[in-house]
Length: 329
Image 1 (tube, rainbow, N blue to C red):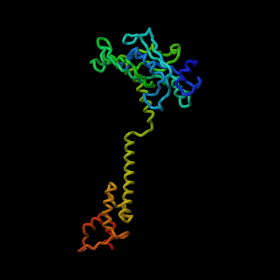
Image 2: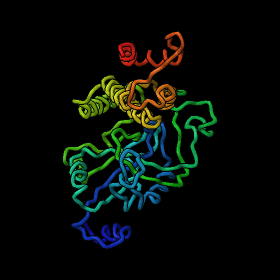
Image 3: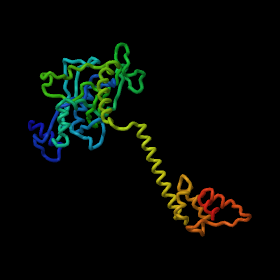
Image 4: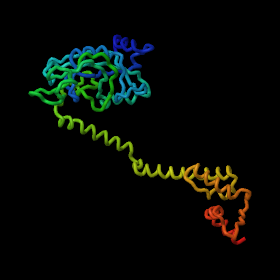
């Protein structure tokens, strides 16, 4: 790492770092060709973004949390490739950034993944004030042309201009812009793929063919994460069983509480009925009126003609063993 590079990085840090404490890597942020969303940046927008992205953070999957920050861009430049043309017929230009991170135990795996080409693809988060239709030049939100459709042999896209803010750069699995990602010095000489080897995807079939392997890999990885876990149906049954157990325990506590509150014998607590505390308390109150004055003893009644009145009937209907004891007394 030369002194100029180290000075640029240290202009963004709170203390001066040594070269051996830092890890740096180059990355293609975006370009002026038509991307998978059928949008493209103007050359003017790329030039503006080159300045706006200096000092901006690199995160993962556009998740804007501080814990998700992994690196920072310390320099950027727009590079032209006169030997390559864009899908819309212009000279190919791309925005190249230079990023750094402090070497720590926690990011050692990430550094290895970047070096191995696993963490590579990126996507920019930025703001442009102007969006026009490539077919008619009008405001893209107001004209009748639809991006991705072909008009007189020309693919319609939205042209993004007047870039006025850059938010972040994210590592992603499938970037909107083909070829946006981490690069290496002399990568072509090592038998790798450079921006010149990428072809613009202009049809849905081509996009599906390119994206399907990534989708399959993501599905397989996600399935592996949940291997050994119970199914949603079993999970719901377990929750229902737990809720039933909880409700039974809660009602038992309510019955015991009501027995104490309404001065009922402890053995009558389990005979109280109701699904809620209010219902159980109401039943306890009624039963208390019957058993009042007979703590620990079987209540005695002396209705006329040896017939049980309505209150006594209600009591013994809920307490058959007490009725038997009374009849045998």
